[in-house]
Amino acid sequence: MPHYEMISHTTEETLKLAERLAIFLRPGDVLTLQGDLGAGKTTFTKGLGTGLGVKRTINSPTFTIVKEYNGELPLYHMDVYRLEESDEDIGFDEYFAGDGITVVEWPQFIETFLPDNRLDIYLSRISDQERKIDFHPKGASFERICEELLG
Image (tube, rainbow, N blue to C red; front, side):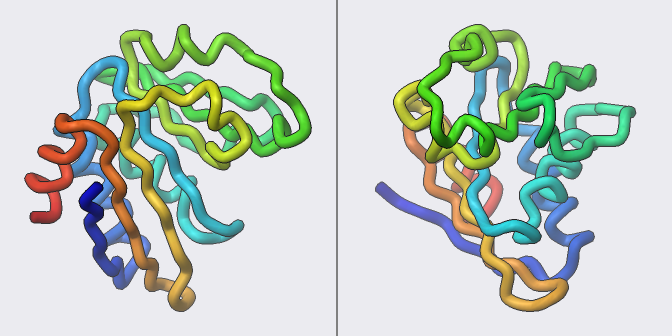
């Protein structure tokens, strides 16, 4: 599987990259975001939300597991960290096959529920501002998106 990598030098660059990515996304697309605390997962999701026309402030859904935002397409923002010791299905399929874009933080905790066709994104902190962002597309449509966005 190919993967694509870039260095974001500022928070603004990360936001703009995610905003540009949103242009390519279609209903039912699933993105996973992995990275340590403070790596920029929520920042990346904020950029996606801007690109999707979300007007509300996006913040981490840590205590609710899923937050839904209305935009040109709905944005479903999941933080499944609290499901680490659980195999509970909170209706993932309804989101993954729904009419919106789903972003999953800490996806390793629900691996068995994730669709095969998705875009896995890894964020690593280099410095206070800089992030390394790795894109691992799973499926031809996400390979094309990465090629357009980063190729």
